[in-house]
Image (cartoon, rainbow, N blue to C red):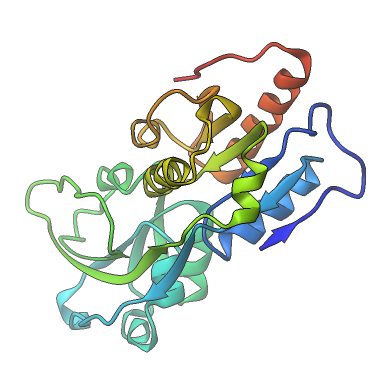
Length: 251
C-alpha cells in the first residue's frame, strides 16, 4: 500500500481523499499521477493479478493477436516468445507499449474496449488469438473472422483493509478502473457497513457504473476511457466539493 501527498502543495479541494483501488503496477502509476496533480491520493489495491496456466496456439494458426490489457503480456510467460513479430490489435497506450516491448507489431490501438478494434481488422487477419484475463467480455466478430481465446491471468479480489475502511468512514472519492472493481468495491462497502452517502465515485467508462450500484454521493464518468481522463475528472470533483457545486451524475 502506498499513500502520500504532493510535495508541491495541494490542489483546491484536495482535502477530499482520492483512493486508488486498481491492482499493481497500475495502482502505483495512478497514485504517482494523482499526487502530481496535487490530489490527496492513497493507494489500496483491492486486487492482485496472477498468471494462469494456458495452452499456446501454434504460430502458423494465428494471423494476429488481440490484447485488452498489458497484464496479458506481463503474465503470459515464455510462451509469448512464439508470437514475436505478429500483428497485434490492442486497447490503450499502456498495452500498446507493452506489446511493442514484447516484439509484437501493433497495427491498431483502440479505446474503451476491444470491440472498438474489431472494425479496424486488416482483411488478411482472419484468425485471431485473444490473450485475456479470466473475467472478460465476449466480442462480436466480423464475418469470416475466427478467434481463439486463452485466459492467461486472473485478478484475485482482496478484502478491504481496515485502514481503507477507516478512511471511508468520512467523505472520500474512489476511482473505478473497471466493472470488476466497481462490483467488488460495492460488495466490500456492504460487508464493512460503509455509508455510501459519504463516498464519491469516478468511473473510467459508462459500462462500469451499473456494477457500482446506487446511493453514492456522486457517480461520474470520465470523458475518455483512460487513466489521465479519470484523474482529471477526480480533480474536477474535488474542486467542486470544495466549492459546494457537486453534481450527482455525469452519465
